[in-house]
Amino acid sequence: MSLNASFSLYLQGQKTPIVKNVFTLDTCAPISGAEVHSFEDERAMLQAWRDFVVASDPDIITGYNIVGFDIPYLVDRARALKCDAFPLLGRIAANRTRIKKQKVSSAQMGTRETNEITIEGRVIFDVLQVPPPRSPRAHPTPSTERSSTCCNTWGRESTVGWVVG
Image (cartoon, one colour):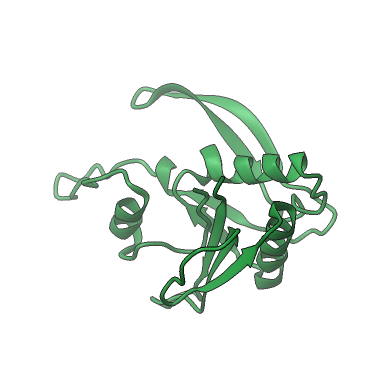
């Protein structure tokens, strides 16, 4: 099994990250421009990643499909591994990350199931949930792949967030 949690930290208005981390179970090849933190134990990796998020104190956590997959997956893995402090990702130390399933409906998207995620003091922004541009001059995203969508949304491949894969 391969589990990676990465995090790029940007200061507002900056185009390049001040920190680029990858937390990986087992080992991986060096990644140019990133600090790779390797762990033999998944529980220790999740705890170290959580500690990094809390210490870096981001205002916004963003990524592609983080509401539908990444955040719930990480919280579920931490629960299964009895990593009790993991859901304490917010700015209010005693408040756990809350994930509530909900159904949403719209004429454009139909009815679908999603998650409402609350991490106290942080904005969760999922690029997958950004509606397509309506302007006739706007260019549609040519691909739904994570890197392509991020490039078309922010003009760079990724931003503050994480990837599980």
